[in-house]
Length: 240
Image (cartoon, helix red, strand yellow):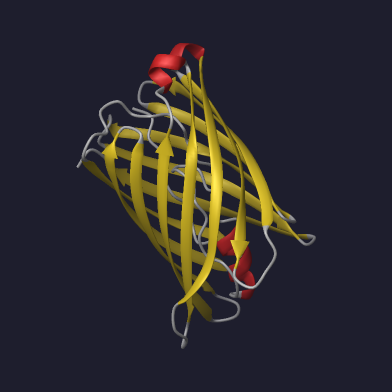
């Protein structure tokens, strides 16, 4: 089973970039182990099941932790709530985030060899000492293509986000994954939104296939001429 889920505080692109100043958005829709990319590969056995993912991130002086429960109504429709918290160790400030994401796929990749769908997200943020406020909403169109006789996937995403009191930001990403050893997959992605660029790559190992997965990855983010490096460690439980 190739299962992916959400990413870190305004996704290691946006949370952690925003978190560098700790103002602005802190959530970005994505499917683990990616940080900025959604998958359009429907899992045939995801019918009335829960999954829970948790991960910690480091990007420059920012440390973050996220947890994301998700319910799949059927293989093509799911709803996820992601909760996160990021702290800038240099500034001594923190931001909490919450994002609700709805995803619907229009076909089955196992039948057609490709999949496509739509993802709608609504996020809120809370800085230390302040109340919660609506942070942004987003719309994304994911497309996935099966490769190497089902041992790999190519993902393409295009979409936009509308931060609170700011102009729309257009963005996109491309990601690739392939199983290289039994229960072990390598993955990589490149994403761009506004003036921010993310490079991210790592490995995911299924401790128990289709049930329990562990991933480790490295990331590099560049925004406004500033470059930060970091790492992500995540764990996910599926078909609960």
